[in-house]
Length: 170
View 1: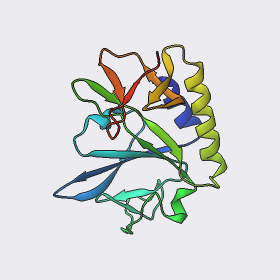
View 2 (view 1 turned 90 degrees about the horizontal axis):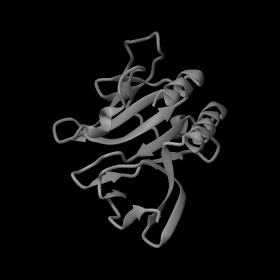
View 3 (view 1 turned 45 degrees about the horizontal axis):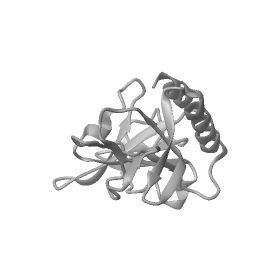
């Protein structure tokens, strides 16, 4: 989605992916601009984060540093820590199997988010609402969520892999 890349650049947002495997445990990758957002097809993928604060990644761990300081001292952190959560949006989902596509959910982690991440989130929501190619609304069990956006697919249904009751709005 080219429009998303424009927003990422405009608000100087950074994208990180949290992965897990038996060898490395939990680890992070910083996704550079211009890379495809196909990390959701990686078997190790768990969740992703948009952040208005740059966080260096050293050997899969979040560490102190800045964009120009490529050598950073590892300091294990999490995007849920108080010193980072104000700057982050958590994203979950996007995996797919032969019959389903998992819903992507976004949430601002902090109750008092950084103004830049809040503006990015609002602009992203406006972008989704204006996109005619996206459909809106999904039944999750007995609950209808009108904040879910999705593209039409040849898959049988959209899914929340933890809740196989998800289905298209009729």
